[in-house]
Length: 227
Image (cartoon, rainbow, N blue to C red; front, top):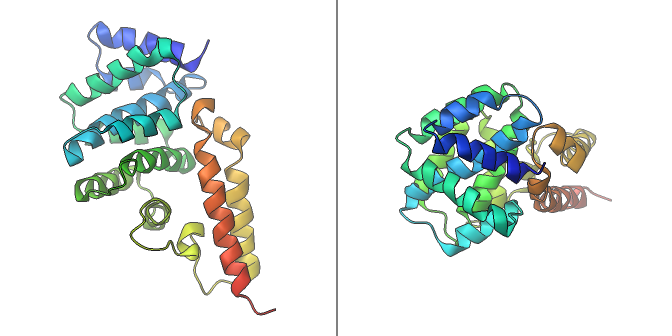
């Protein structure tokens, strides 16, 4: 059974009057957690759309880049998106439930934030409302400030990303310690590791850009060392 079939089942529950937050409460264990991850991205993306006041075609296309949606599943995905936009619960409630669902799995929460940044930047503009939204979601997720700054430096092109921020390391760290962090980040971006965290196979492509950024940062840092 594909993830989108399982999401359709969740949407059927929504159609019977259950709220998205109630659906989240039932999706706490594998493989259902992959469904929860996908619905979380859809729901928070829908809430984020209100931050800049509109949903652009570019943002819709960006979502399609994160998740491969078959034509027969498009209606279900759109329904979840629209229900999330119309639901009376604020995004804070969604974020808290997601935080509770994934517990101490900060890697999964960072994966989710990565998808939100990708969608936020799809139209080429980082709206102040989107920044405030993403910062508050990160705070609710209890992500370290460095993790948020690292994601922002990779996605928001207001300045060249600092390679130390991309890796989340201090410039004063010995090169060997930075190398160890780089290797860990590469390992954590492996598709099998991401799927084990609850990220659906359809969303693993997020790791492709992450690996490019991580490796570029390491190359820049290592190139600064005297020969």
